Length: 338
Length: 160
Ligand SMILES: Cc1cc2nc3c(=O)[nH]c(=O)nc-3n(C[C@H](O)[C@H](O)[C@H](O)COP(=O)(O)OP(=O)(O)OC[C@H]3O[C@@H](n4cnc5c(N)ncnc54)[C@H](O)[C@@H]3O)c2cc1C
Ligand code: SF4
Ligand code: FES
Ligand code: FES
Image (tube, rainbow over all chains, first blue to last red; front, side, top):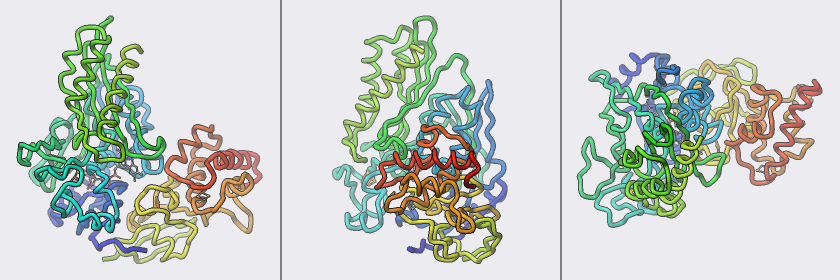
């Protein structure tokens, strides 16, 4: 039995108490189901001095979903989200993404807040303490170089792998973020700043695999919300090394509208590929006509330009990009013809 | 830093002082002395540590003991009373769902969780429900048969 580093544990029952705990322990980390954070604590990757257990915060435990919109509290579990009848009926992409996360026991534990804010992953990072120290650590922790791209100038390419983000991105979702300064509501896309650009320094809006969220110190996510768009067809699919329990090699969410023979709206978002979930830009160029070979080619080009090909996982980077493109093509074709 | 933990463990109420950083897995094995629950990995990948929290399968290796305050926890030791195996235990025994046995307590608890929600699961439902558990020996076919057999034993009232 290896003891974990000691920490204070707070178990607030209301949002007010969470905020109080945050002021009292400014360095505290939020603990959802712990299916990501506890692993990292056990592996000595992080050592928070205080944890705030979010599971009992009543205000954050609700799902509201109907023909008008969907709103999910941060402490809702993935099982609750995946099994919610209205979510499955009106927002299939969300229910399918939730049902594809980890395995069933993990989904009983894992929360929506933890999934939206999931730490980025890399084969040089998600390892035991001795493995990482034998390898002299890396930029994302205490090391000085990136083993994936040793020539990178201080940039980390660790991959965002949460499955809910791409699903909600295709719905144009927004998130509620609360902190000492109050509540702000921002587009979900804007909290993901893992652009990993070699030519721009890390700022509040441009980050990398290490600084992948735009949340300010002390801030946290309380809810994610989207409006229903009538006629939108949506679905989620992903490829993983083991089908029953694994992070995505690549995951893709697609939402589209078809009028007559024409594609009139197309949203495609990926996870498991870049340090941020990627909502493809430029898809409007594929709309306004039928979805044919030419459109497929156009989609392929967008994927090639926007999906990263760094080798942060077991599979070669270019394989992951190919897989992402193939998954997207299959899903768009299926939804267009359904 | 410690807390008093009040839980209902295998049907019995108890209270222990637990440090904040004690995992439920280590609480069960080292504090209570129930070693049926196994440690198979260093982080949520194998399911050997599966227990039920309020009837739902959970990984005790990623759960803090102090966070199950006020909840019901059931381990593999809760099954089988008075020298008689429970339906799921009998299923695994009679259909050879266990070889080296290391993964078995985890598989059994995930299966018990499934049968409490769904007493008559299909093959796919069994596969889905056991997706968080890994077995190096059996090849899973025998495990699926074991769970189906357990469901029949339960339905026939032969074993609880
Ligand atoms: C074997 C295995 C396989 C997995 N496979 C997948 C997979 O396929 N897809 C996938 O997406 N995930 C996967 N996961 C990861 C995980 O189970 C899920 O992402 C889960 O949703 C994480 O939620 P949690 O509540 O457990 O997060 P936690 O571990 O509790 O927290 C994760 C991070 O989010 C922060 N956080 C928690 N709540 C909030 C909040 N409200 N606001 C801001 N920050 C917050 C925490 O501080 C922490 O940094 C897997 C995990 C394991 C162990
Ligand atoms: S991408 Fe580089 S810096 Fe980032 S976690 Fe991997 S090895 Fe470390
Ligand atoms: S010990 Fe492997 S999942 Fe808990
Ligand atoms: S019986 Fe040996 S690991 Fe499953």
